[in-house]
Length: 207
Image: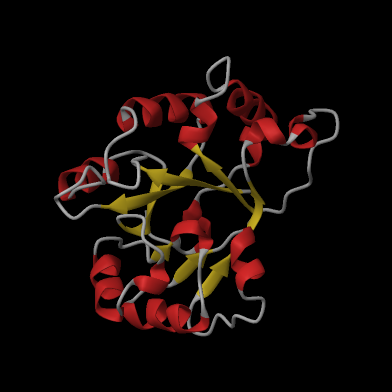
C-alpha cells in the first residue's frame, strides 16, 4: 500500500501554527517507520505555513516524498493556472493533493497544464463531481481516508484489510497525535501493515 499524510504544517485558518509540526512529524515517522507521501501547504510569508527553508529541510528526510497541498490550504479551484504552475515548480515529485480533496474538471486540466503528473483524491472528490476525467494526469484515489480511531475493522490484526500494492491510505499526523494515549491507533496500524507499505517511487515518482 501507499501512505499519504496530509497537512504539514497544521495551522488554523489564519495560518497560525496549532502546535510544533516538526515534533509531531518526527514522532509520526518514528512510529510508522515506513515510506510515505507528505502533503505540504506552502505559505505566503505572512503566515506560518511551510516556507522555502522548510521545504529544503523536508527534502532531506529519508523515505518521504513531498506533494503540493496548495498555497495557504486554499481549494485548488480558487488557484489560477499560473499559481498552480508556480506550485508545481516547488515539488519535483509532480504530486498534487487538493485541499479538502476538492476538484473540478477545469482544475484537473489546470494541474496537468501546470506540470503536475499525479493528483491524489479523497471522498469529497467523487461526492462533489462524479464525472471528472483525469486526462493528462494520473489519479491516486484514497482506498482509506480518515481517523484511525474511527476505523476499528482496519485495526483488527486477525482480519486485515486486503489492500492492493498501490492502494493509498490517507492519514493526518495531527489527527493521530490527538488520541489518548498519544498516537495509539497509529502504533496499532503500523504494527499490522508496516510490511505492506511501498515507496511512492514505485509509481515512477522521483524521491
